[in-house]
Image (tube, rainbow over all chains, first blue to last red; front, side, top):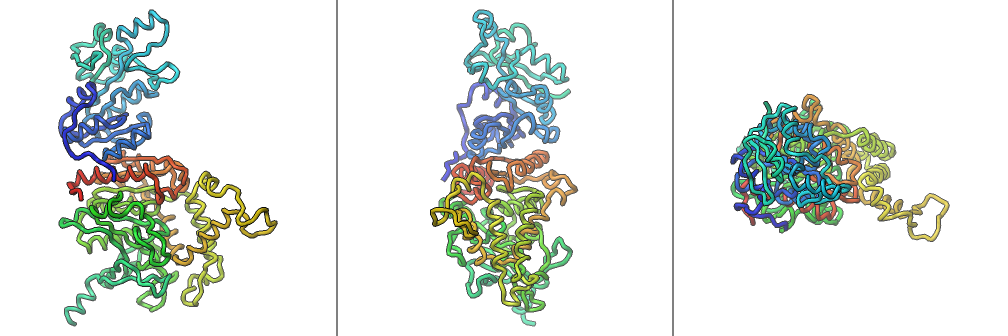
Length: 211
Length: 401
């Protein structure tokens, strides 16, 4: 027999995932793009009774999710998002995934099309210690959240919070809410994303919608 | 007319089944006879009446009839999913999956499997007797489709009083029936798990089937399809059809691993046309045992049903239309080395389900065992199926055993 956890409230998901989870309205339709091992989906399904779906690129991740009873497909954000009808979901979540896509611009356009809202988080390459590391060592920075060497990193399209805000602007995407997370994953709300948040934020986390 | 007689004319009747291919053997399970007054309208335009659905069940239907799983068998499978086969004496084709404590846990679920319409294990098919003539149907049996098979199954499910099947599942041609169920009767299907299948038969699939049919029809014993009446059996043709098909169920890697170029019971080549190689001997064996349990005309009809299958064409040319508004939970499974129903075909179904915003899981299992992998011991596959079923059971509120 395959052990499947019974229905019970889940706890202990990563702090940044918890912040995303807290933004989701109970009972809503959620698509988690790049859902990994399904931790966020599982939490949302059991604590907020969402109608949750996932897309995950790695076969091991998908198998692990389906084994837990989660609705996850093996696929990739680049090619599989275009199938979904517009506003098929209340939330499309893109957590730490955007920087690993081949065409972040297309993906960003798709997530705000198929979701009434998109929740997007990514590592901020503009944070002070990355800037400093590059300046002082002249080598590609390796950090806690970006822990691979340049030649094997899946993160092929890194950006800063300022870059991201500019792209949203170019695409006509509305930033409904923005925040930065510090090293411990604690959130700080942004009134207007600017120089200081780009310098101090480890991660950017944005709630987006189509204009 | 007495009440009893009237009842016999209007209500389906349950009887033990007999297999036309193995006269004298009473098959386990049930046989439901639908009377002349309840004809089955077929895609070819005619109605079949009376008609019979032979089926087998495992486990117990719960009080609110919410735990029924319909398992659909593949091309040459039958309803004997999880028991010693009454004709061949071999284990059931999904014995590793269906049983107490297994993935399809018969302590928890009620498993139903029907012999498909056109089959030869007790359901109406070309080898059964046409009540109008008292002779075997042969080629006068109407050409049937996957949708016709599903219509016949639905009659049985209606008869059993099951409003909503907890799951419909099956591999290969069984998977086509699953897709057809989900498209035709979405409100009757809580969850659907089509495995190693496709929403349409490709040119290559049709081509292989045609080779099989031509092999049968080229056998003089086939006698224009009326071999039963003449006391003949087109065994050679059917065996060749099976041999050709069997190759498509395996993979190059699996064949190489199993046989390589090893010789059969000899040290050197015979410079003749005996089965020098083990792979030849294996295929000949597969062909020869197949003819003991399968009817040649059934093979023609069922392969035709697969070839005609094109779910998108049934829905205005757009596959997603088959699933619009569906509430069914889907899990699609494919196998990396399956070149008969490759991952790309399964993924096309996933894309269509996404376009319909359906609830879908999709897993590709890494294996070198080819299409046949869905019948074999694949732990990752079992874990996927078990996880999906458990997740669905949680949503359905099914109690654990």
